[in-house]
Length: 336
Ligand SMILES: NC(=O)c1ccc[n+]([C@@H]2O[C@H](COP(=O)([O-])OP(=O)(O)OC[C@H]3O[C@@H](n4cnc5c(N)ncnc54)[C@H](O)[C@@H]3O)[C@@H](O)[C@H]2O)c1
Ligand SMILES: O[C@H]1[C@H](O)[C@@H](O)[C@H](O)[C@@H](O)[C@H]1O
Image (tube, rainbow, N blue to C red; front, side, top):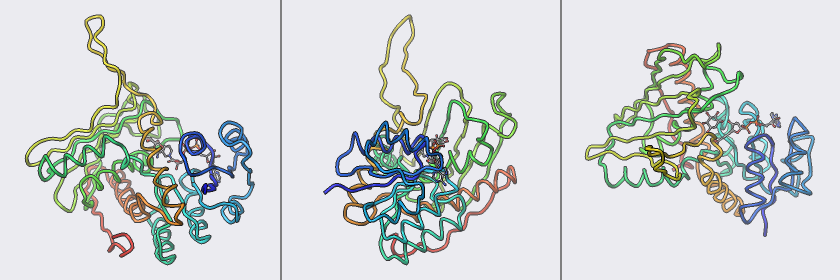
């Protein structure tokens, strides 16, 4: 039996997920879509979901008896409302990051899921599914000894004018916030942000680059460079320094050339290409679990921890150079 999915938010990633569900993956179909911008919904249906129903009301889509599960791919500040409504309908929900734009909002989702008594939410932290990060985790767990430090970088070639300083945390660093605590099996205890000299490519409302320093409960010190005007490429770096050696995230596959006295390898420019396999794997996991009426993968608790950590990092941006403590409440039993 095929899982009937409704997608709320049919912009860049909503369309890309619709394409992969309808054209690449097995076991599910996107049969309904909603977008505040109807033209985006129409384009998504025309390109990737012929025959799907366009709902003008997202809550009607969530409640519709023909919809088994919901993908929330709208702007971050709208996620909480739709995820809560999907939990209330008792349906599995895949929510793109961030789960909510405030820690309080993410906590309301955790509480609703706990009250529902079973997992219904998967957060779109796709890097946990990336073969490179998975190989890195195996090396960190079994070869390089207890981790001491992590050096990471998250570089985008450019961003639009709507992207302002706190978004470097909520929109960009949030991937490292999630994947590094998964990689290290650890939680954060403090955050500090340093601002190097500003890139001339950064617009007025954006301080870019930034360096975020996170410390973990086990004593690991992590530095993450966020540089969203790198110009040269979409580049994700991660190196874990352990007691016995160093493990590095592999570069994405690319043809190496020896040409004109130069050793060359292309660098990707778009996030869609960098994690293309991971998006396929995370949605495969979602379809499998949702077909059994539940959810798998990154949890609402992971989304909540990311929100608490993000808030601390934004406070650390505002208090430039000051170390901000991160306090997490006890983890509900449902999340292991
Ligand atoms: N996991 C990843 O790597 C990744 C990559 C890109 C985006 N994202 C996340 O996905 C979400 C969407 O990002 P995007 O790049 O596709 O943005 P986008 O602007 O291209 O698309 C968002 C769509 O949501 C629609 N929308 C906004 N508010 C809505 C509402 N209240 N109800 C219904 N539709 C609404 C917009 O009209 C737009 O079509 C964001 O939360 C973003 O952080 C995740
Ligand atoms: O929404 C995108 C996406 O999450 C990318 O993976 C990240 O590199 C960008 O910085 C962010 O703006």
